[in-house]
Length: 430
Image (cartoon, rainbow, N blue to C red; front, side):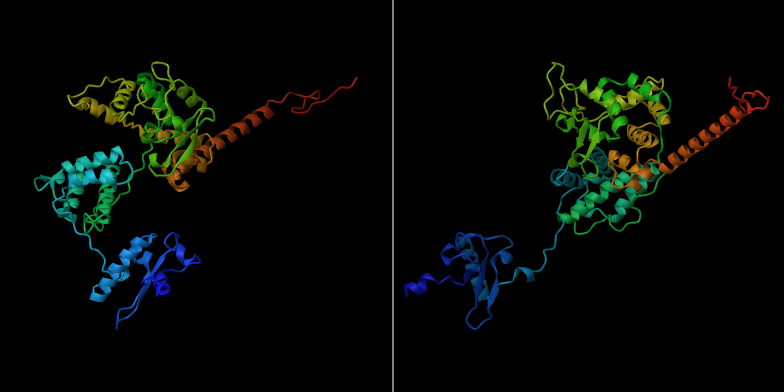
């Protein structure tokens, strides 16, 4: 009897090469085996049924006893046969409250641009009530279409509307995935989709870069130079720390979590940018910035959230206009109109940088890496590489014509020979 009791496992065993006495300590999976009187047998992996690895015998025993009770009472249902859990909308959760959860739980930082789009979306009234105060589950496809129709009525550019589309669709998809919504109201609407828009090709005019640097503060000066030398996005530069800046090897490492495409890349540092960075490595007290300090932060290396006012001021002054501001730090109407007519954004510096590299003869795949584009076709479209190539071909044609004319003139003006024939030289040997 003692021998029989010692080897009795009550339907729990392991299929491994370990000795029976080591089963409670070995890492292999437990297997459950039970057949009630007059019923069918149940045999399965404990791990598969529990949905996790169960190593200890005590826990496996407790789960096995629960299953035996359910099998005897006819209430046991295999995990694979259980009906799917249908997500129910979060009752009473407003769009603004959902936006806070989305920002906290997304798993990656939400860009300042996306936050601005969401804030304006939440502030827009629909049927007299701001979207932000509406219960999330009550927002319909028609409500969203009215919102986007309003953006068109306001004269928002297609590129601006596309940013709203990206934010709205991303948040709706996440809401469905996490169970806040049972259906995506933005999924099937033709009115809520990205639109093709005219390609922006604003380039710096002669002398414009010099004027910008003259009227920019030290922080903005460094940012302008960095944007023109690397082609990095504004957010990538503002998030850069000294840990990722190697002046010895002349390289900047952009980590995946800090880039728009979530793909890291290493960018070479030009001599011009290296000189600018070398002057910014210390704080006002002369101490070297710690590795976690921001390269393009304030004097103490702390993050700078926005450069909008500094950029607008530098652009307006560079074009001979002294800006005026309202009480809420927005450009006054006259200055805003002048700024709009100048039509220069900080992002245009990234376009300028890529175009300069392409015009300098860089292979397009190298330019794509510098800009952090996923593929070369994206870079070709972004920089209008076809036009750049045509202009380069025309310059080569003009140069060849100049050479041909020069050769023809040289031939026409060749010195007379001793016999009076042009272009023939005679050597007299004494």
